[in-house]
Image 1 (cartoon, rainbow, N blue to C red):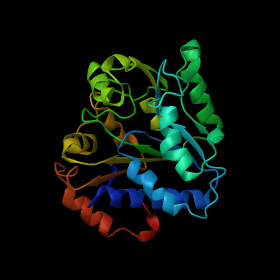
Image 2: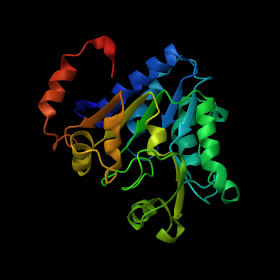
Image 3: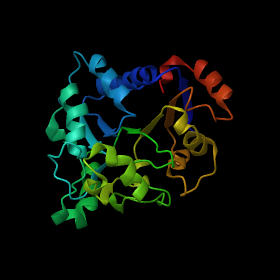
Image 4: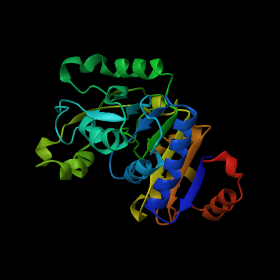
Length: 259
């Protein structure tokens, strides 16, 4: 079972996870981070700005979860641009050490294998940040994704395209395909940290943590991982049957264990 940490706010979650990442970098200056995009991880990245003051981050490496296929990397909503804007520049990371899947159509047939090779060459991901969709997806692994899947091209569902249309001029501008780390790739990270906030994520969180292991809910794959931490606010925890148990165990765990 994943460790579930229930906090009072997004900011508290961000501070908690940022402290874990800062400790990782201090102990391993060339740490490999798995970077998620979207609004969910923003409190972590914002908290890291203060946590990393005076810390040498010149050797930190990172791998983004996914990218749109066929979207110019210079486009404001490409995940290359988002990672640069929200993570690399604010934290002072070396952009040459932060990789994003290559969504160029000319090389897309082998882009997944190339990305897998790059992660392996880096020694694997030390800590992977994750969000979860209301349908239980992580990365762009929609319901039905194999737990053994690797980095590959996926067709975006119409619901996902509609959800993401708010970032574009119209839904017609939202790409139909993406390249995403697979669930099997994600599960190879040494530590998974899944964040969720708000009542809208409560059912997905409960199903991922306490429900059956099923490809119909990709987030349930975290149940297979030996070191997975789920950090949620009270609203996102509202449908957890064992919420009181999670609060008790976290409150009484040894401080040196971290999360």
